[in-house]
Image (cartoon, rainbow over all chains, first blue to last red; front, side):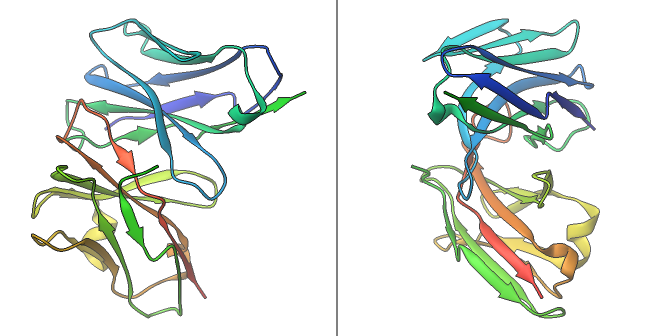
Length: 115
Length: 114
């Protein structure tokens, strides 16, 4: 199967600064790495993803990096705003003996952006 | 807004009762997943299928959980005999293919077993 570790569990940053969340995975066959944002009482929303044929992807203030050798991927939120406060989850899926398409999630990071 | 529609949003059942929740996947998405998110925000995969066929389900779901996706009807997840430990947020998700592609979640059904 797959296991995904996510750190930190809680992250407090000042408005306007950057926030970084790191995840590691075990299965070298994993090939798809999405990030979800979940606000209280809401569903997880896909905010950005990266596939194994890429090392970097950027969209609207979000950057994801993938290091396949180290089996590590990360999310960087630039110029954080109060609206970025939420739970963030990384996930991994892909080949090997995993259930086809099953996402294995990290335990989440609670991001708090303060003024 | 999520295009995966789940009903009901909240469900309260007594221990031993059946609990049934429904999901309409995003239009055109043949793959449906069910996940359980517990109070610690941990996700647990339960079952997934493509069109009407079950692809895989975990051991827990083989015993008390069942799911189906009949054609032209909502998908459903049913717990035959609810236990206190089943209290959680049940999330349905859909995608275009079983892997390597975006997975979109509904708002979930929050089950409370009293």
